[in-house]
Structure formats: C-alpha cells, structure tokens
Amino acid sequence: MEFADTLNALVYLLNKGVLNAAKIGSIYALGAVGITLIFGILRFAHFAHGDMMTFGALSAFFGTLWLRQQGINIEPIPTGLLALPVAALVTVGLALLIDRSVYAHFRAQKSPPVVFVMTSIGVTFILQGVIRLIGGTGDRQFFFTLVENGERLREDKARLLFDFEWLSEHFDGFAQKIVITAPQLALFVFTAVALFGLHRFLTRTRLGKGMRAVSDNEDLARISGIDVGKVVLFTWIIGGTLAAIAGTLLAMDTQYKPILAFNLLLPMFAAAIMGGVGKPFGAVAGAFIVGLAETFAVFDWRVVYNFLVPDEMHAATALALVPAEYKLAVPFVILVLVLIWRPTGIFRGQVL
Amino acid sequence: MSLLLEARGLVGGYGELTILHGCDLTVEAGRISVIVGANGAGKSTAMKAIFGLLPLREGSITFAGEDIVGRTPQELVALGMGYVPQMANVFPTLQVEENLEMGAFIAPDRVARGLERVYSIFPALQEKRRQPAGELSGGQRQMVAVGRALMMEPQLLMLDEPTAGLSPKVMRDIFDIILKVNEADVGVLMVEQNARQALEIADTGFVLGTGRNLYVDTGEALLADPEVARSFLGKRD
Ligand SMILES: Nc1ncnc2c1ncn2[C@@H]1O[C@H](COP(=O)(O)OP(=O)(O)O)[C@@H](O)[C@H]1O
Ligand SMILES: [Mg+2]
Image (cartoon, rainbow over all chains, first blue to last red; front, side, top):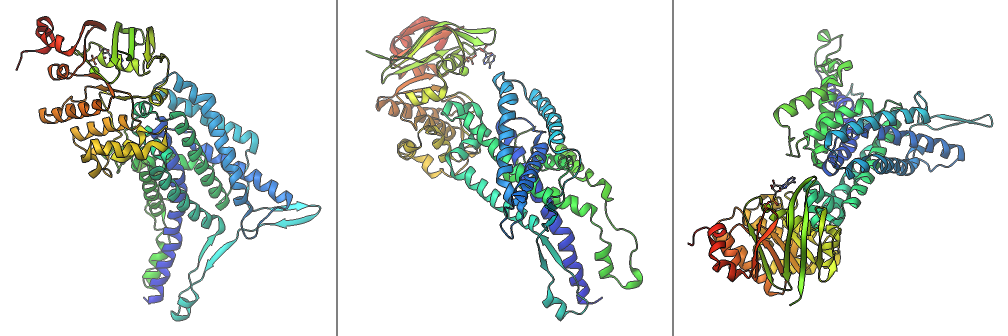
C-alpha cells in the first residue's frame, strides 16, 4: 500500500462522508432549531414544519423563475439565492397566517397539547395540497435553461473545485477531487451565520431573553410583563425564515419535489428531541449527530477499503452497514433509543 | 389614610368551581397587609384574581384609585404592581441577571437603575449574576423572584408565601428584606404560612377561610385575639 492510496482514502472519506454529513446536518439543524423553538414557546410538536420548508423552496423557485425572466442576476450568485429573501418573507407570512387563523384559536381556548398536535397534522395535509395546487406534482430544477424569443439562456451550478494539485504532484497515484457547489457553500455559510445570529439574539437582546423566559415559564413571563404575543410572533418569524432557507438550499442542491419534506421530518424531530426539546443549540448538536449517523450508516466503505488493501483483496460488492434504502430507519432508531434512555435529550430539555 | 389597593367582594374561581366567596383585601399606601388562613382557603386564588390572572364573577378592585378589573398583568406591571407567585417564581435556565431584566421587560430604559437597586438590596445576587437561577438555593431563588418583581420600582409588592420551605434563619432574612423594601414606602400584600411572624410585621391582617374574610384587624389585634390564636396561630412558642 502506498502513501498516496492512504491520502486517496482520506480525501474520499472527507468528500463523500464528512461533507455529505455536514450538508444534511446543516439542513436538519436549520429545521430542528425552528421545531424546538416552537415546541419550547408554543408547547406543541409542529408537524407542518417540513411542509413549511417545501413551501419556502417552492416560493424560491417561482422567485427564481421570475428573476430569470426579467433578466435580473448578479454574477456569480445563483439566482435562487437572490430569490431567497422573498421566499423567506412569503414563508413567514404563511406561518403567521396559519398561526392567526388556526393555532391562535386553540390558544385562546387553552386547548390541551394533543389538540395542537392533531391540528398541526391537519395543517400538514392542507399545506401538502396547497403546495401541489400551486406548484404541481412534478419535480423542478433550480438551474434550468430558459427559452426566450428562441434564445436559450442557461444557468449552471457554479462550483468550487479542489483538485489538490500540489498533492498529486508529490504523491504519484493521488487523484481525488472535492467539488463544492454554490448552493452547498451557501448552505454552510447561511447555517453558520444564522446559528451565530440566533445565539446572539437569544442571549443578548431583550426579546431573545424574553423568548427564553416564555420557554421556561409562560405564566411567570406574563406576570413579569413580557409581551407573550410578540414572543410568539418572533418565534414564527425565526422558524419560518430558517425553514425557507433550509428548504430552498436543499432544493437548489438537489431539486424541488413536492415531497421534499417527507424525508426530513423524522430526522429533524429526532435531532430536536435528542438535543433536549426547547434547546436550540441542543437541536443543532442533535442535527449533526443524526446527519453523521445517517451518512455513515449507509456509507459504502468499498472505495476506501479498496484503496487500503492489495489488489487481490479488493471488494466487488457494497460494504455498507445499512442498505441505502433503509436510510430513514437510522433517525428512527436514534429517536427510539433516545426516548428509551434519555427522553429529556442530551441537554435536558422539556419532556414531550 | 388612602388605600393603595382596595379589593371588595371578590367572587371567582376556576371554571365552574367558585373559590372566592366575597372576600375583601386592602393595602394602605406604604403599609404591610398580611393574608393568613388554612391551606386551600383561597389565599393564592385571591392574589391571582387581583393580578388579573383569574376572571372575576363579581367584585371591584382599584389600585391607586384606578379600576383594574380586567387589566392584563402587563398593564398592572406598568401601573406599579409587582407579583411574586407561590410556585415556580424564577426562570430556571435564565441567569440571575437575566431573570431580573425580565422584571423590567416593558421598560428597557429602567433596567440599569432597577439592577442597581436590586443588587443593593440583595448583594448576594450580584456575585451570582451569571449563574442560572435554577442552580440557586431556595433562599437565593426567592431573592431573585422578589428582585424581579422590584425591578420596576412598584408601589405595591404582592408576595405569595415567600418563606415556604425555607429554614428559620433564611425566613428571618426574607422578612428583614420585606421590611427594608417597605421602608422605601412600597406597599406589601403578603400571604404567609408562618402566621405569627407575619402578623408581627403586619399593619393589617386578613384571616381567610373558604374564600371569605373570617377576621380583619391590625396585626397586633389579631395576635392578641384568643379566638384567632387558637384556630390559626398554633401554640405560642
Ligand atoms: N388551577 C386550579 N384549578 C382548579 N382548582 C384550583 C386551582 N388552583 C387551586 N385550586 C383550588 O382552589 C382552592 C384554593 O386554593 P388556593 O387559593 O391555592 O389556596 P391557598 O393558597 O389558600 O392554600 C383549593 O381547593 C384548590 O384545590
Ligand atoms: Mg397558596
């Protein structure tokens, strides 16, 4: 075995393993933070969160289409990112509309949590219908070719290529590349900025501290004079914005699908519960743990293995812990294990 | 003597269940009123009713001459009332100082002055200002709770069993603090299980039973009343 092959294996592992885990972990984190904030403050499991992400992605798609038709662009930023602010605004608007017209009614009646959970499941179904009604049942690409007056206008996914030229010059046989696309880069940057900003907001601002206070003890918050209505409003603004960002960036990285949220809801809830419900940064930790576990459970170790063993020992079939079709079972198993061993999560949140 | 708080004929409860059957509660400006009575007499319920947390079926409540029936807690805080409930009266995951800041949520410009005042009353809290309130001892938690209610410099401080579960020494500390706060002309309406000690510092005492006033008099007179002593104060120590 040559040193170049060890390098090959390491870089491959970083590219297909760690980077993928970070990517899906970031998506889960942006969603799980919203879920955990909503749970902490409104005290119910918001099952419609995944569809809010889908809705955000769909709004961004229509925004992108419009901007492309108007010929508006800022090189080299993908048009989808330009549409993101509007998508976030529309998603927040939808969240507030649902809150005012549905959840506020049950809050006024002081309904028990189970009523809210059932209501949020109902909202999920309505949203899924609305999403298909507006966006159709098909998939949509964020990077498409626009035909206008017979002219074909392409937009391609900008990408950063790391080919490690220096390494391949020095180590004969090293031939790995890492490609990070613009949506992936945006995802990492947005996640870092959003989570840092959220932390500052929750620990440094009056309203942020008020949010944590309501999450701790709503009655005492009212008695103290905290404007609980405003706290609820900001919970939806933050949750809706993060959902729109996550949905859009995921759709830009892959594609928009009406069932975009389907594979997200379970891992995001697993992350929120694992992190301790009501604890935003617990949810972030949970999200990356779920992302890593999921990625490495279905990770095909064959390439890495073949780099590291002599040719005659090469494996011909996939070497994965769990077949890729069972990927969704991983967060499910994590969720079950957490609920059995530590239902308050690793950071001791509220009990569901 | 002008009445800072005047609650008359309170009738109310939880849903269909009526707990308050027409009790009166008053506090003179800058004085201390104490409510005593058996468990379940409706003392906490009366406090909640005054602080707008319980819909009233009948009765009137005025604060500094103003009708406050139907006002939200937020409005009452702005008017100059502070309330420390009996249970769960701190934000456990918030730091001590953040707990205090929440007391002046409606008026951010008063946070600095409020903190200065609260730390001068409770120097022990200043040392613990960055610690989550949930990690404090019972006595210190009670100080945070009282401090939070004092942040807006209220004219009336309402305390529901501030010494429950505390050692006799800490109980005396809390009573000393209440007296100190009262010296600055803050009216106090306090529910207490330690009836004898509480009535000793009371200008007016209310003995409540099943949501009604059983006895109303000065603290001194209630302590001297053999009837009250026999049923509510236990044996003299
Ligand atoms: N949230 C509530 N819902 C229904 N009944 C209550 C509630 N809180 C208190 N009660 C009842 O009201 C009565 C008076 O309670 P409370 O005012 O707490 O008494 P005290 O403070 O004098 O010990 C009790 O019988 C109690 O069981
Ligand atoms: Mg009580």
